[in-house]
Length: 463
Image (cartoon, rainbow, N blue to C red; front, side, top):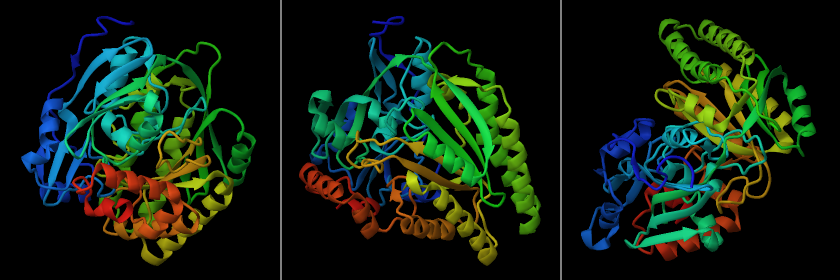
């Protein structure tokens, strides 16, 4: 055992209110009954068919999805944030309730010089949410793409009201439950692999598309994490390259706080203010481009030459990367097309602006995802991918833009994430996932024959 009193259960906070991260999800939430269990026993009672809770029944964590995957119009939303205990720590694993946030988990582990491998953009997400749906970030050591890959055991309350405990000895079932969108049951408890805190080196550069594509090709066989911010109207990328460090590196936590604060709070807030005080689109977007260019140039020159997952998680104090008021949509694309893809996106964004006088006021964000077969519905199950995320402050044109971006993504072989990809067409999703989706549907029908956990949004993909 490690740390102080590792066996002692730790209650982190009281039951939280649902987070208002998606306008669509909030409307659906208002039309559903909301249950807020604080124990496994209460979750079992909710899922017991004899208690007749209105269906569909949908679990919810931080409510950060950009799609209607948690909606339960006429049914029951199960807010899992009350199950927020970290109950067990060993030398190699940590067990946490589904409602523990990633920031809380990182704080707990860092106090004991431990971390969960991987990187993400949203530390306010709950551990149940990151296992049930896609949650990714720039890996630095060749780890799998999704945070859910670090799960070694789960406790799930099935649609028939039974408690199902799954671990690595049932690898196929664990693979099915990861990224399963909560349609196979409510995740109540998660056990992750942990390791001593590891540092990585960070190199930040300003590049054009061609130079970036060459770098991606040159690094294709190396264990390096890649993240970028692309300004299509300036045709400029600000890149981050991360490599595992072979020796101990000093990590400047204050610099990480500044970096995160700038990227997730200052720049979005200033762009939002510009949209209110500068009504002329041409002038406003020119100022937005200048602001992002200046901001990312300054952040590129900060003293964040090394980092760790623990420091990065703990520095994300605001969690505003996809929080209100920002809107977003993410798709995954094959790596080999990255130069053509970014060029095509630049043309798409510029043409959309010429036609509609609207464009995203935040950069396109990209993250390289290693091939990851830890979840059956992993979008990078067969090959490494780049996840691209379009982000904007609220605008009346956002929904139309997200719909057109979905058409763009489908033309370029994009693979959707059911919690993050706006407007993915069901027939296209069938083709993108192929026989894996057919097999998942078969398992879902066996585990939930009465469709208690299937809302209309997910039914179009998973029925």
